Amino acid sequence: MNYSEAKNKFISTWGSLGTLWGINKAMAQIQALLFISIKPLSMEDIMKELKISRGNTSMNLRQLMDWGIVTKVLVSGERKEYFTTEKDVQELARIIAKERSRREIRPVIKVLDDVSSITDDGTKQTQELIKQTKALHELTEDLDSLMHKLVNQKQNWLTKSVFKLLK
Image 1 (cartoon, one colour):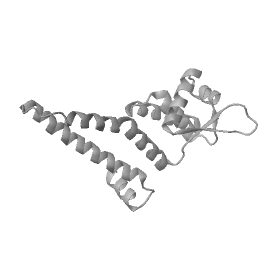
Image 2 (cartoon, one colour):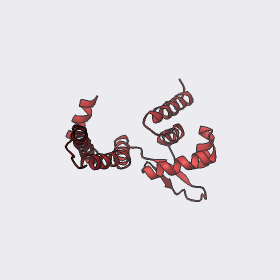
Image 3 (cartoon, helix red, strand yellow):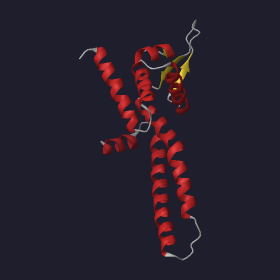
Image 4 (cartoon, one colour):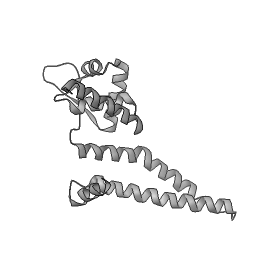
């Protein structure tokens, strides 16, 4: 396999995986392209490489910047905007984990907190709802807290050990 084939396979696979992680294919492909690029790319470079429209590219770049994964880069003497992504894999994982917590897990914890704190009217249904949602709330908060502790650690013995256990 030559460089071009390997690059295309990586970008395509990363795009497909992105849909499993809850982001769209184009967004994941843009991030993958920037991830393996040796220099910042313009919107036109990205559009040409991935064969996607300006609107699609612009919208996905904006979302990637909102996530904190992609940043604009000033290129001396250029009027175009250029983009790059975090190259450190562990830092990238930390950014994504923090953002997923903020966008997805914390809102679920809030709902579970609201639901589990309803007034107990003494019925079995209400008691079961309270019991189960409290248990789920506690578990979700514990997992979110553990994830925050892990992602806030710099690469150290604890993080290395946990990642070894997960392999």
